Image (cartoon, rainbow, N blue to C red; front, side, top):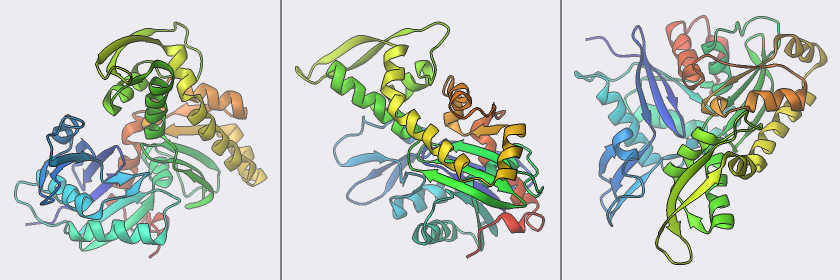
Amino acid sequence: MLSNDLAIDLGTANTLIYMKGKGIILNQPSYVTYDIETKKVLAIGEDAKIQEGRTPRGYETIRPLKDGVIADFEIAEKMLSMFIKQISKNFVPARKIVICVPSGITEVEKRAVRDTAEHAGAKEVFLITEPMSAAIGIGLDVMEPVGNMIIDIGGGTTEIAVISLSRIATQKSIRVAGDELTESIRRYFKSFQNIDIGPRTAEKIKMEVGSAMPLAEEQIIQVKGRDLVSGLPKETEISSIEIREAMEGTIKLMVEAVNVALESTAPELASDILQRGIFLTGGGALIKGLDQRITVETGVPVHVAEDPLTAVVRGTGKVLEELEKYSKVTLRR
């Protein structure tokens, strides 16, 4: 039996797995429900996500990754192993795994990612940064002597990089991204509505009416939560204008990081970026008006990638398929 070489986007919010020769074969939320006392995993992925905030005493539903890196090593390892077993009925450990990581990752965090992949069965582990993967995934030629700017907004990190000649010429990685936008909505409800809403509700609000620029037609939605004064269930109305206000501080941090990256880019590369534009990938690319907001603040056109949610794993998959060709883009030990 042949081993199943894999490319993995082990994300804070979602885990995507690409199998060599087969393409993307798994896309699941990075959630685990486990027994607190025994650490036995009871559910992973979508099955675990629907249990968030609903588990009985003694059980907990968590995301073992935080800010793009592994927060709970043991649970992350179990989750990854179970995902890999899910995709192969006759499980054969992967000989090679290419796995993407944030560009601002520390040596300790790199080691944790490598160890997790090795414990999940990999014989060889290759690491690649998320913005490099995203650039390859959307079809950019990263080997050209031309500046390409990528902004990849995931759950835990916003990755900004200028790529030229197979290398990252300028990079900025901030641990402020989709999760922080969700939390900003929760904080707004607590502070201004006296209502506690769950993370799933806040995420739904973010995707439905969240925006970085005024909408052509502002919306009003109904939101259910728990009244912080009485402790009883409560329903209220909220407008997309209020949600935009709630998200403004976080969006401002993201845009500021883009400006910082542009300011530290070499003039020739900056000229290329102005001509070619900035490419936006990741789940955050789906926030309404974010591309326009970045254009307004920087003066540079912004292109939202086709299928931005899978750009990183598609790029990681291309690297897996042509490891020799892309050897220069993988991280050295």
